[in-house]
Image (cartoon, rainbow, N blue to C red; front, top):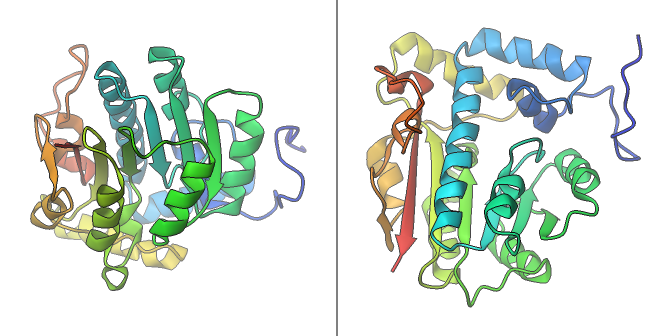
Length: 268
């Protein structure tokens, strides 16, 4: 049976799997096809906890964006955004503050084209095709898309830096982004780690290289250095489920199972 694809932008090959649509599938979204779901199941077989990690990361992102909007942040730069499906940054930010501006950035042309189609006609949003490793381009295009870097901006790096190898110096990339934003800006990072993981899970995560996008697992001590120049807000750099959980959330006695840290810092 042919799946409906009236939401697919022209020029997108729906017979080839897309990393963005695979991510969408793990999040329970509707912007994916059988070919994407098949690849997702292969990845899940290699890394059994990956779906839980992705979902926890998205829940954290929603909580953090709501937290930032409540503190007066009106500009959001979401780098490595994927496809902005239900409950994403623009919905949270615009619900809290109709004057908010959200600019999504992704390296994947598929994600960008889908994003432009989804966000068409939604005021306060923009989409950029760019690589986090090209900070100058990201900043220049974000300014063209309406972000004012003389005012506070929340730079969101949720689940993207672990795709940047050490050879590309992710710390320097984060430092360049931090230097470009005004005092009162925020930096959000979530990142995969081997901390607290049993050997078999660590080995499974290392198999990610077979998908063509290897994940670099980094310890908390390294991730903490990425916040140089920013003051971490409570509770600091913690396993994702421990970052300001909603009172109604069940207590997770083993937050390390998601295999990822999260933190938010404020530039003084």
